[in-house]
Image 1 (cartoon, rainbow, N blue to C red):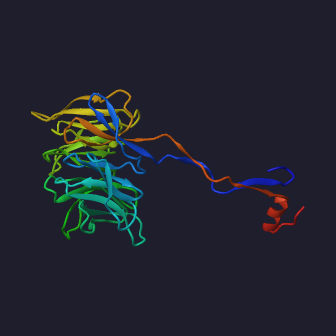
Image 2: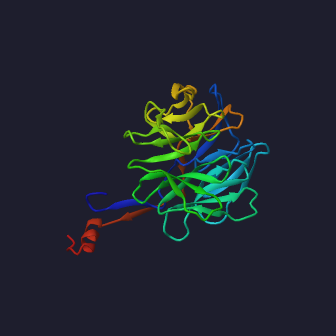
Length: 317
């Protein structure tokens, strides 16, 4: 903009960067990493099937399956929009996921679909706000999920699959509680709670919810991942981004034995553990990628100040 009122700009879509790209990788317990041969996804949620043969992940608003042996992709969901947060059932035959409501109310509900794709998705649970599935019980009858209500309060609920009964609250409080994961064997529930004023990893006995133990020593981030034997929980330090393993002792009394950084300089978000118990599945956000558009047109506007005054109902000078 010049003092004379000459204003020049380029007309067209602005250039920018795309930050919403995530690659998938395995991380061994010694820190060795291997990037998976899969195109970067536009959503970070991914889980490995109970038999270790497939990944369920989100791309372009739908749930996809990636065969780890054949290296092939298959789209699973077609109905509706904005599907995400897939979670495998214990038998590997179904996936729970969140889906945007189609009635215009906003928010998400939870659905379950068979991975063979032969039947439509089945509605499981939904309230006002947003629901995000997080885990199943080992018998495959109940899903656990985080619910973000209209007031942005996050609580933990569970719903019975295939039942008309309403979902029931598992943990509700005046602070946020989210990201529930049940230990192998179903004895303990790990989750994130802000009851101390900062997000921390807590454990409770499950399903009666007796006892409460804090296992993180500093603010932590979800997701949480259990070791296969239920003796450790993987999580991230919020302030440093470090990937930590909290080793637990359950008998004769509960205590945290130690908290160990899994591997130096490993950057990524833990999503799941391979059934062999030796590899963590991580997502890692890729660097910014420039978005280039066609060459825009240069537009020159003269007498800009007079035009502005005219539109404001003032006399031009």
